Length: 274
Length: 301
Image 1 (cartoon, chains in turn red, blue):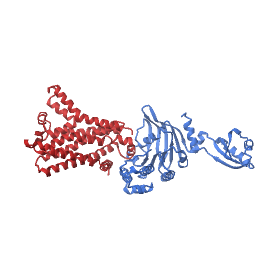
Image 2: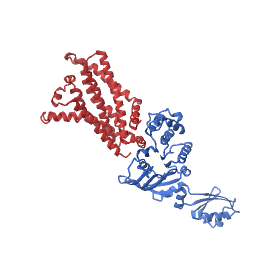
Image 3: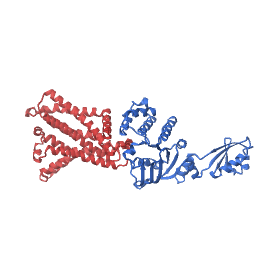
Image 4: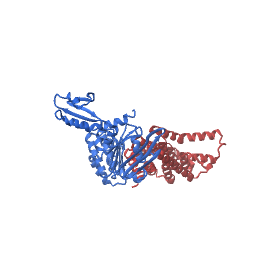
């Protein structure tokens, strides 16, 4: 087995063993089930498919929760091992810096994917069993898939934080900062700019571009506006029509948000003296 | 054949030179002890040889090439100071993980765990291990793949005496197999009999290098003679030897004389001539402790 897979398998097993997956799965499944049941109650009157409503509410939940879970997994990955002294031993083996990073990314990514698939899959199964709803299961599957991508984005950002700083505590602080920035502040500032300029200062194209500069917005655009049935209920129909971003562009943005921070983290980590 | 060669090696961290112009060679089948205070540059030297930190100046060759390349790392064993492992993994899983990275079979892990005396604890989590057990596991991982170069950073700190002996036995086997062994330690007395050559680092500089005898001669350290004199006649010794009384002291029934290396044979002859007075002679060469104090103290620590 090559070094990347060896490291990935170890991270995966570590995560299973310290009950991390169990905790994350239960959290995601619990919240997803609550949203599925509570969220479908008020929509009967307008005839919305409960499944579509669930996709909208779950996607909004994911934007808060999944980046947090991913950052918690990732911020410690490099600086923590350097601090504990396990990194020096690992790098004395015939393993390159990039292999350590990619191995951890694959292992953590698999943990996250497992938690999301189990948590949201369980919720999906319950919805289907309880109501026998027909609906846009493709949108649901796409939401689950992009949630995994969103998690991978914040894993990569977490490694970047872990590679930049010299203390574990600083990395934790930086991770919280990244979460605040992308989940809360970015949209606030963008909204502020739109309000301040009375919507005149920024063209629709520019807004679209700016939204892709934030991975959580790319995720939001894809899930809330990119798919036809969901769009009507998400309140994003207006903006999505105007800025005309294809789902492909949103996926592309998410992939770029994985590749660039991961590459930067790899470069910084390789230059680091352990 | 040379396993490691450093020429004019310099490693600076900012303005501080952790290693400052070191020339050193380590041959296969040789055990070299690296001595020095904390911060003298011992660990940095090991990192340089592992290819973990690049040199600021000079060259380093490890097993015939650049340090840190795949072949060099695969043939090197390393035991870091205060070795740390993932607490949640068992001893077996830990060793199996490292064995995979070196592309070694599972059977080797079982053998090594038995060899370091962890066979019974292999299925327990490393978090439950004592300091000595962790050190054993550290040694087991360093032995993976029958390394041709072994780097041991403070390997016996925290080990009980019995384990230390077992440890040096393994080092001796490595040497006999033709591996080059570089080990650093604070415990000078235990190194004396168990290394071939000694290198002393002081603030990044190599201040002395050679066998213990070489270093003792270089330092001009005295040989210590312990002379047992016929009962009640110890007062006569200095006078009949023509030895300055202030350089002779009495310790629990023996007379102790410190003699410069050059005067060794003349003094021996004179002592032997006093066969009515002297009943026994014991001669001690300088100890590693003395040599170490001489070379690191002379630089005004």
